[in-house]
Length: 102
Image (cartoon, rainbow, N blue to C red; front, side):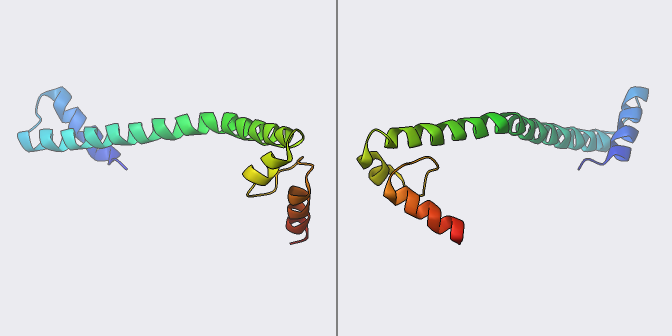
């Protein structure tokens, strides 16, 4: 995390026009750190905003996958490595029952 007191001190010296060359390098380094932190926070916020939508889409995929099973047994046998809620075929029913008792 960026050193806030040092940053404020350097900014104050910059505003007063008394910033030394070495301090300018330090200020540049702190600004670079702030930019990196800002990028990380923006990425984190973007992921957080999409989480509800991702969960919604995953639920829809599960619903549609279960719906495919009602039309074709081979869909269940071919695509379900884990039991799918709503799948009416024995493979998923048996696996769900085993998972529920475990």
